[in-house]
Length: 113
Length: 116
Image 1: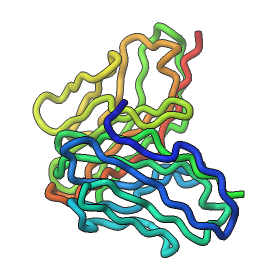
Image 2: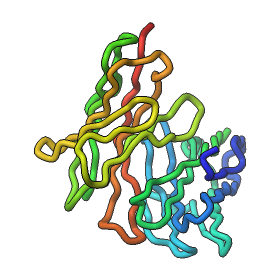
Image 3: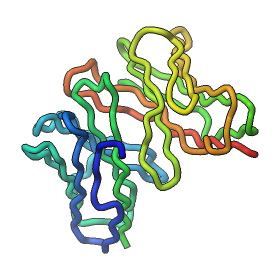
C-alpha cells in the first residue's frame, strides 16, 4: 500500500456518460496530481492541486474537470466520454515541493464502450 | 521547458547480466530526477531519485542510477538482472523550480525484458 488510495480500480461505462474518479493522498501531502496513461500517449499530466487550489494544468480536455476538497482528497470528473478516453488514470501526491518524492496510487482503469 | 528522453522502447537482457536503461534530460537549473517502475496492471513504484549530492544514487531492489551533468544523463543500472525485473521503467524530471507548481514530467518509458 503506497498510501495513496484511488477508487474505483476499474470502471466500465458507455460513450456519452460521466464518471468521477476519487483520490485520497498520502497523509500529510498537500499536492495532488492527476495523470492519464494510454498506449499511444504515454503518461500525460492532466492537472495539479495544492491545498485546495489549482496550481498547474496540462493537456486536460474541457470535458474533464477536477477539484480538491478541504480534507485534501481529490476528484477527477470526466464527462461526455468518448472511446478515446479509455485509459489508466493515476493520482499522485507529494508534500509540496516534490523534493521528498511523489507517491502514486494504483490507478483507475477506465474503459469506455 | 523541462523534459526527459528515453531513447529505447525496449531493452533485452539475459538473467544475471548487467542492465542499463537510458535517460537523458533537458532542464533549466538543477534537475530533480526520478526513476519509477510499473509492473503489469499495477501502479508506478518509486525506485530512486537524484536531488543533489553524490552522482551515484542507490535505490530499491538493487537498482542504482548515475547522474552525469556533462552528458545530461541519468541512466538506470543494475549489476545482475533478474527475470522479476521485467517491467516498464519511466524516467521523470520535476518541472518548475520548487514551490507548489512542480509536476513530474515523464519519459515515454522503456520496457525491460529479462530472459531466463
